[in-house]
Amino acid sequence: MTDKRSGVQRLIVPVGLVLPLIAFILVTFVIPLGSMVIQSVHDPEVAEVLPNTLNLLSEWDGTSVPSEEVFESMAQELVLSRESRTTGKVATRVNRIASGTRSVFGKTARRLERIETTELRSAMIDIDDRWKDVELWIAIREAGREYTVKHYLHAVDLERELDGGIHPVSEDQRIYNTLYLRTLFVSLAVTFFCFLIGYPIAYAIANVSDSMAKILLLIVLIPFWTSLLVRTTSWLVLLQNQGVVNDILVWLGLVNDSDRLALIHNMTGTLVAMTHVLLPFMILPLYAVMRAIPTDYMKAAASLGANPAQSFVRVYFPQSLPGISAGCLLVFILSLGYYITPALVGGTKGQLISNMIAYHIQSSLNWGLAAAISVILLTGVFICYFIFDKWVGVDKLRLS
Picture (tube, rainbow, N blue to C red):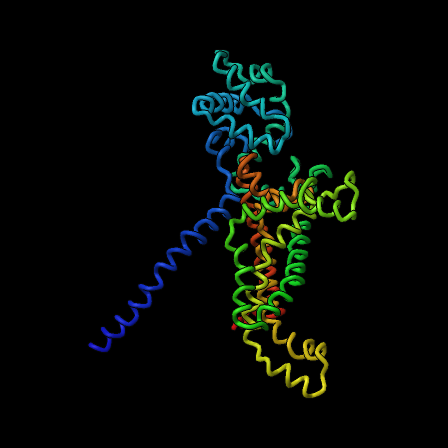
């Protein structure tokens, strides 16, 4: 009995220590992630405002204007929606399917309050003749689906037509696939530039004296500790048309004063600023690995007749691969979801898919579409991670 009690006590202690971590993960990751996934497919606003109308439309054949009963139900629920101030929600969601119909609902709801006739079908058509359009009623029925994949279709530049078929949106509206490709390109480019700049810096820090290494590490970490917004704003000052970089180029005679370079509000500004911001995330893993590589290996290679270049390529570089893998993975994943830097210095040509997520949350208020894009982006991150794990192996990363 004593052994059982002691065993239970030994189990309670580690479980109690882990519980705060589990609670933290649940509150900050699992629950928000689950909410985002649900919101991307669940849109009950129209179904809550027009339940009876949608129930009648579920039996409608969709080939002709609905019956008087459907019009009566719609009229009653529109008046109630005006009283509860939910007409705008219905109008917004139907307008996303049938563009240009947003004003129909508000105008009809206002005038129906003053109409006493029992011929509601004729009255609603007199208020707005679009009520006799079959496409509008099909859009209402489609918008009334509580669970739908329309946000995911929209997030990949597809749409469900009123006939039920799925087709690409018009060319002038195809923006999301372009943003996915641009985000992938920027992430790969930033990862490459961070590696190109960060590897020599990490090598220098790992192979100098301890006192000098501390100074160099401090130089790397001071920008890392500085506010992201401050660092990004600094690049606006440096790269603008009348900024420091252009002034230096003009002073050196490399460019004419009238032909200053456009370095911000484009892809150039995005790449420069993001590379600077994410550079420490490449340097630190590289330095952690390089610090653990014995210097005797290079000496042994030299004693066997290898020149410095051969010693580096065949001895040192392969041992630094875990640091390269960790740094590249970290920078690449962070780049995929970056928002502030592209928003400030990227302009319309340098913005990424994360900026579109912010737009739908803050401006268009289409949270379902924002959630769908977020889920697609998160899925892409997981795919990249699993490909990396399959190719390199996360278990092979040894940072010290």
